[in-house]
Image (cartoon, rainbow, N blue to C red):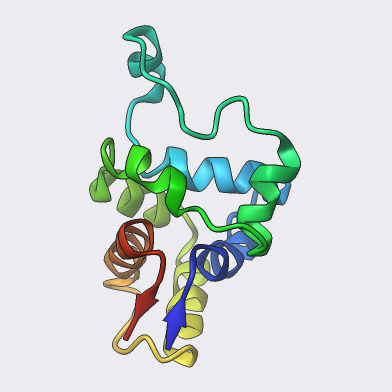
Length: 134
C-alpha cells in the first residue's frame, strides 16, 4: 500500500477534533512536525507554509499538488517526537480508529500503543520520499 501526504492528511483530519479547515489542517500537520515555531520565528525562522495562498495549501490536502518541494524545509526542522505528541493528544478512540484505518490500508501492526510512532514514521517518509510504501 502507498500513502501520499494527501492520503495521510485525509486519514488524520476527521480525528483532529478542531474547527480547522483542510488548508489550516495542512499547516497544523507541518507545524507539529517542526517544533517551537514561535521561538524560531523570533530567530528569523521561516515557516515553509507561511504566506501561501489558502488554495495552494488546500491543494496539498486534496492531492492536486505535491508537497515534496517544501518538504526539505520541513525535514530540516523536523521532530518526530513533537509529531508523536501531537498524535498522542488525540483521544484514545481517535488513536484506535487511526490504527484501524492504517491496518485497513495495509500498514501492518498499527495499534493503540504504537499508532503515534507509526504516524510519525509514515509522515517523515512521505516528506522525505513523497510517499510511504509498505
